[in-house]
Length: 132
Image (cartoon, rainbow, N blue to C red; front, side):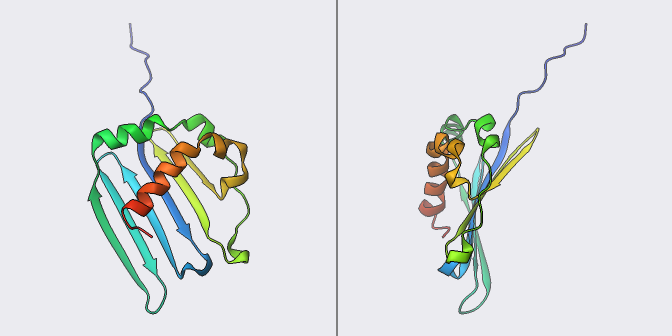
């Protein structure tokens, strides 16, 4: 008899990027089980890109994942760009071993509110690691 158990879905990485507006640069944080990668693209006074990698404890990764519900996150619909009002756009991408979930500016979607503990935790990493 064959084992028909499907492999469990695993989150491989979580990326939040903030771009546009009056910030004159873009920031992104990619969180993986063992590392946080911060990327800053600065447009003024000169164009340059800064990347830094910070070790990330597996226990912190596990805490972050406990706040995550992929099925709710997948329901978040993207909203319109906010750059026309000189505000920043926010893009989320969650990559698993089975799917890729992404949305932009989902702030007004009711499912975004259901996931705010997770979303704010990722935002906190972006600021804690000085990615922006």
